[in-house]
Image 1 (cartoon, rainbow, N blue to C red):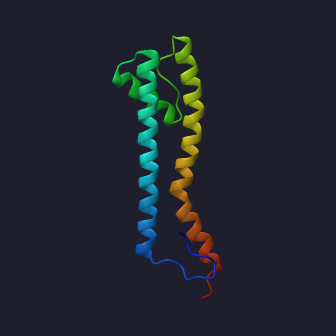
Image 2: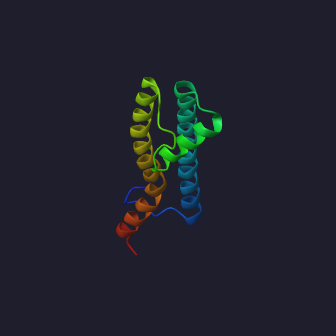
Image 3: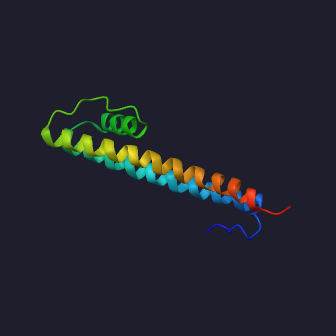
Length: 112
């Protein structure tokens, strides 16, 4: 997928496509995670779609839920989803920055 340190650096066009693909994967992961959180809040806490969206988006963004869970199963879901959201935030950041960091590190090995 990436060129090794013995291969020439990818062209700017190829690099831009790589960054865009990584961005699309991160957005897809975010949308999937948002849908998962919304489904959980609607199912376990009986929130409206808009309230479920707000709670899931706030957790994915690192802020925390707006509505405190009421049911026992809702509290369990909110806790596990919060842990999941922190992990997904890190994964999305890694996905977006990986091509940039690779290109920088690769540029240190290119002979000029």
